[in-house]
Image (cartoon, rainbow, N blue to C red):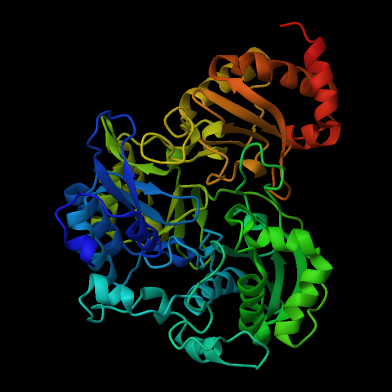
Length: 560
């Protein structure tokens, strides 16, 4: 609080660490040279299940225009970020968000982050349960310290309680959270009975979906949860996976991306206690000495899934049942028009790299405001940095399409499939970890890949491509069929072999590809793909099947 009251435009390193738990990172534009850095703050919202009511969008639209840099950034975890906030405006912005019934608490820091789910708002039992339990887990693992209200609301309660908490009141979550089985889950800390005074070793990510729908990269989470219903649509319980995560460090082989392992099945009545048991396992046994190895994926990897399951069961007090068989995973971004199943429609609007902005004739940010004001529709942010309007009256379909066209937003059929499948992190100029460009250069990379596909007569090929400016993996590059991971100025690692349905990690193919080497790097790989692919085999599956050595041998003998 003292740091916020000073005339300085920045905060100390200690205050910066604390602010992370409040959803904020201090940043500076790295392209502006000089002694006096232009400090500003990024603020990330907490939006369980990606839900965004129209009044919250209107508030964010106004705040970004008046106190930010004028745009909004949809993240890969279904929440919005605001950039360019000055320290003197932080309290106004955060208190406004809290008072409307939203929050930034737990959007960053070593706690449970924003809980994701499939963005498809189908009105079926499975999808309803997925949305509901995403909010259950978000509320179960929320930090309880009063410090947030003390700092941002002067110790007062928010004008409205968090909107998602209203949807899950019937679950008696506070009672379930504080229930003490005597097995070491609940700590003596009176403020934070689950987190204690040290919180977790690192950030903790949870995703929830339904069988077959892998629109959210379920295997990249610390805990992945799949709703299991009986034939009548009644909830039986959940398949649970553990130990996924993307972050790694260049040239440190003991850091790596990892897809989650299947833990097993848990009946619905035991689910909150099982989730507490997993969190306690990581809290008590995760690596607090080496931060680069502190994520739960390293604990699962070190112990192995069977020993990790036994560790969880020691807290849980029961055996975890075997994983239930399910339908095969598919990937869908849920863009375009869909029948919601209750007489309503939903519409998925693609957003290039999550940047909601007005720029020239392209005025997506204004279009969303007009739609919010005219139709008062709820939105859902997608795991692929786009957004979905839900509960649309069919008679309003043409009007929504017209608003988007009038604001220069392309219809979905005019969006290149490479763009629809792609993701990039913000990277430069504001991210302090970025080693090179990502969001700003990704459109040109996609254009160059498109030109190469056209040249090689495989224009119809759809390849899932992702890019990050550093190895931390915010855009989940290590799951992509083809990924570019920043490794220095205008230089990238090339990763191949991820699954088109996002169920396995890719592998590093090239350590340091210079920006001008893109075409000469990819052409031999694509030529081998054309020559040796199996019928209907996807690019990522082909690379995974033949492996790095075969591709490198082919590329070495290929004549450009």
